[in-house]
Every structure is written in C-alpha cells, then in structure tokens.
Length: 531
Image (cartoon, rainbow, N blue to C red):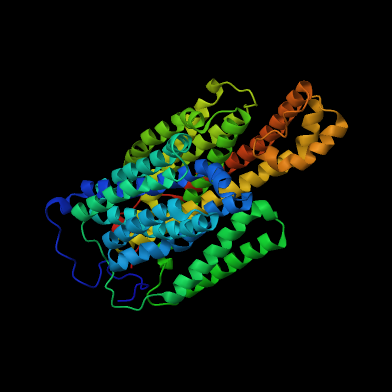
C-alpha cells in the first residue's frame, strides 16, 4: 500500500499485533517508563551549561572548544530526530527507545572518562545521536497506547517531566560541580539510564506500525541530515562569524536549499521518510511552528537570565537555580493544566494564551535594571513557566495527536526537530542581539557612569565579555573607576537584554495570532490526516 496515497484507509496493511496483557497493557506504566528516559536526556542538556566553565579550566579548553561541547550534541540530535522516529515506527518504538537509552547512558560515561576536550566533543555528538533515537519514540509510544480521550493528559504529564527536568538542571548541575566535579554531571546518567532500561524491559508494550516490506528511504535520510546539519551549523556559528558573513549566509542557504530538495523528493517517493501529507493538517503545521517559537523564547531567555543572575548579580549557580524555581514550578502546574484545557477547548485557546503569557513576561523584563529586587523577577518567571507549559502540551497534542497512529514516531521526531531548531535559533539570535546592542551602547554607558571618555573608548574591545554580563575590571583599578566600569557595563548588558526581550515579545504575539487564526477544534485523531 502506498504511504502517500490519499483517501485510503488509515489502517496499516498488516494485521495488528495481539493486544498486550498484564502490566504491558497499562498505558500509565508506559508513561512512567518513557518519562525516566526523557528526564535523563533533558536533565543532561541543562546541567552541561553549568559544567562548561569547569570543563574548560580542567581540560584547558578554549571558548570555541566549549561551544562545540554544546554544538556537537545539538547538531547530531537535530539531524537525526525524524530518522529516530521513523526507525521506531518501522522496527519497534520500544526497541529503538531502549537502544537510545543504552547508547545515551554509555556515551555519558565515556564523556566523564575521556580526559580530553576532543573526547568530550566526540562523545557529546554520540549522545546527541542516541538522544535522537530516544526522544521521538517517547511520544510515539504514548500515541500508540493511550486512547484519544486520554492522550492530551498523557502529553501534559510528558511535558511536565520535560519542563521539570530542564529547569532542575542548573540546581543539580551547580551542586554536583561545586561539591563533586564536572565529570559527575555525566556519571549521574548511569543510574538513571539503568533504571530506565529495567523499567522499559518490564512494562513497555511492543509498538510498531510499519509493515517493513518496503524499501527504506535512504536518499531522504541523507538529504534531511545534510540539510539540517548545514542549517543548524549556520545558526550556531552565526553569533561568532556574524550573521551577514559569507560563511553564515552560505551555510544557511545551503541548508535551506537541501531541505527544499528533500521536501520535493519526499513527494515523489512511494515510502517517504517524512510524509508530506502530514502537513495537510493545519493543526500539525501550526503546532510545529509554534513549538519552534516556544523554545526560541524559552531557551533564549533562560540563557541570558543565567548570565544576568550569575555574572551581573553575582549569584552562584545553585543560587541562580533556586531563584528560577518559580519558572520550574509554574511549568509543572501548567503542563497538565494546558493538557486539560486543550482536551476541552482545543489548542486554539491554549496556544495563544500560552504565547501571550510569554509576551507579557518579556515586556515585564523591560522594567529590570542591574539592581532590580527579586520581587520584580519572579512574576515574569511564573508567566514564562505557565506559558511554556501550556504551549508545550497544546503543541504536542496538535502535532502527534493529529498524525495517524502509524506515523506517531515521525510526528514526535518532527516536534523534537522544531524544538531543537527553535532553541538553537533562540540562543544564537538573542546572544547576537545582545552583543550588537552592547557594542553600540557600551562607550556611552561607561561615559555616563563616570568613566573618562578616553578610557571608555578603550573598553570597547571588551564588548564580548560585557555581552556575557562580565564587567572588564581588574583588582588594580582605583575603586571609583572600578565602580563606574561595573555600572556602565551592567547598563550596556541590560540594553542588550531589553532589545532581546522586545524580539521575543513580538514573536510570541505572532505565534498567538497564528494559532488563533489557523487552528480549529481538532477532528478525530485518526481522521485528521488521511492516508
């Protein structure tokens, strides 16, 4: 049966497997099993940012080397997420999920044992590859075992685990780095991975919807991987190379061109890696776009929030993590709440509402300065957490819930790819905006703070440090000059932050309008996209 034909039965051509019995028939046990693996991956992604400075000191790594600790993981993961979902649909989601769990755990231990920055980067790339096998199949498994009326709530709990583990990262990472060593942030994945594997072996049902009797779309795999690698590479290097440089524009253009060829090719192959028919569902398409905006805002804002709290306000990593707990707790509450509201009213309510909450939080941050009290900080933290949690639940339901069950893994991979691209754009674009604003205002802010004009001009070379919230002062500076440099540098950094949150507010309003205008009450899940 052609997977691209329109108007045929959505049921697979083969007979469905016998229904699982006992604990393997319990969808809530399936949720517990996949939640453990999801927790491990998301926790790791956020603790690494805390460990990076110590990795650099211990392994004598440059700033560029440390960027690749993050970028190697991001590029490998983004390039193979859709493939990971497709492999699960064809060969068994439970099998591919467990392979991803084992591989991610072993790669984590290898990073801690590597002893060199080259080894860390190499095994981080392997981590990304195995994460790409694990993450899309968590949603694919939930889509396969939960009935439609309960799928939204399952997605809400899935989103709660994802949000909570990501937000816990700075606290866990800070404690481990301060009291043990940087290697411990990777060793911690070993016991979590073992528990995830044991629970999965005991409770995960067999879940596979592809017949396996057709040729695998190898050209599609290659085109998608090459296009995404080029696109993500251009995004992550845009901040250091410059967004108008030939290297950045060439990489972005090449990635977009290859992805265009991929989309064209997928409409002409009988059994595509990513069926283009999925995008006939407005809810699925808009859900993917809003997911990208959601994580553009979340990861971009968290990145400069940590710079503000640690470098401008002088907090330790643990103290900064504790200060952001309102964001974590709000997300935990918002995920199941968003799922319940989506189930009752549809994503046309919850997506715009979540986006508007984030827009309001972004505009609130415009009131911050270098000495703002905590009373001015926690309300936008709560608003961001509520908004992100609601949008995550609604967009997951819109994407995976509107795909045929047979394509659950591919839909999960599509959502995760949108998430990764949005997050990469968020950190890169917002850091570039902050850097550009700092460069244009630093001299003026230093002069206004009392630094002599000649000296202020000389501090222009410290733009990169100030863009990270670090004041270019030294111990031998006169106290009065030191205080003026700290004040001026902090004000220049806040100018950059204010420019960044204006952009996030505008994007959130655009996302809200897109969801409000384009979404309708969802149809029955299997009928949403016909085969």
